[in-house]
Image 1: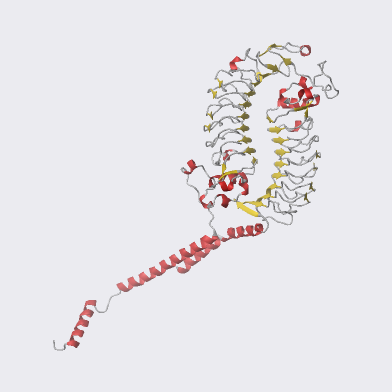
Image 2: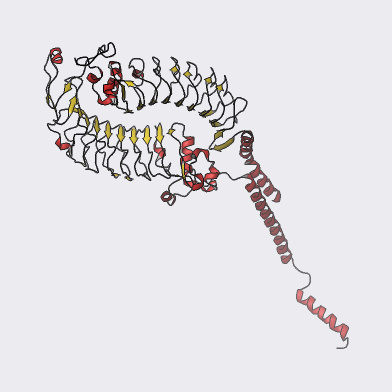
Length: 638
């Protein structure tokens, strides 16, 4: 039995050795050059600010899915096969390296790479073969470089690319068919030198875009910009501000608020026209409608075989339409309106209704009953504090709803009833501090949700269940942590989330969020998470902190951390791995105890047998004879 106990103990110890051996092997590979952190079979290789000029001489541990951080080194040139020893890397960060040249085949072997960051470098051109071998790439960041040219076909093989960030470069134009076969959902072109963007060969290939950023470009608002203007008018996506730089008469104007006649005023005799940019546009100009009854232009009447039905426009608004048979776009911005019911006469079949910059305080249930044809409703920058139940119930075709810049404090479960077609919802810059459970669950087509710049400190369970979110902005709220269970794990089709400017508390409760950010291969976290507390971590990036620094006792942290309230309902799972240095003494103690028990059992057994063995002379006879012998010796005659 003793040998059996010994064999069992040795077997238990040796069976747990391989994983520990592999862990030691990983540490031996990483400790000489970089710091490494392994979690759930994904290895973070952190080689930031190490003075590296090349990385091909180093090799990552084999068969380990890895994320490689090389920010802040001196990789001024990436040579062919530079990353041949890192074939399992899924995320590669090369920011702040002074990078000037990427040779053909530099990214060979990175067939699993999904995220590539080249920001804050000195790149001047993106060549046709720069990204050769990156067919799995989903996220490409190349902002803050000096890129002035992109060669044709540079992105043609990036068939899975969803996010492209080219902001703050020197681009004047994009080559034809640059986005052919690319499935972009997010495009950032801010801070370049674009004066126009053609539809043919460029805009026509990004039909699946969800957000495009065009700010800080010197847009030349002439006839050449009409293709961009027309495209912006037809898409239903988030578009950053596009402001005219030239000509002087339109300087500072937002392109989306201008009419085509403003861009191409050929019919205005008093306007000095410079052909061909101002007068050679061949498209039909949209008619302008004035307050009151609306009728088509004379030219349009002549081209129609049937007279169109006259359309109505509210007297305080300006209405436009592409042709007499299409729906109206109603512009009622900054008209000192206090109630939507003040819009008279009621418009017929409006498509877009802009009510920004007014004095609306309450949205009544009956305000929008006659606007069932709306696809866009802009109620931003008012004073809305109350939205009555069922106010949006009739807007079954609405795709974009703007409620930003108001005084909304809470979101109720029935607030968005009836908005089954809604895709984009803007709630930023309110004072929202509470969201009821299932508030967004009926919005099955919701793709973009802006909740930034509010007072949120928590989100209810299952808050995103049933949605199709691809962009979520939670920036500048009061979040100190976010649970994964019931919240972040709802984002199955997730593309981009912004978590910046929140007072993140970098203790054990944030471990689940940290793990989710680092391990989620389908998500893109826009901007870094910076710790606000405790004081020793203030200002530090969450991803730069090791787990043991954040949570000194990781064995007490469950894989999916929950909120303090949730922790009372769910029993935390213990960490399955115990260090070998702890296990061996434990097994020795157990073995010693078992051996002692065995010896004790055998001793008790022998004693029991001895007690049961029959004696040859009764015990009391022996004692009596002894006593008599002693007395006889002392007094033989007694």
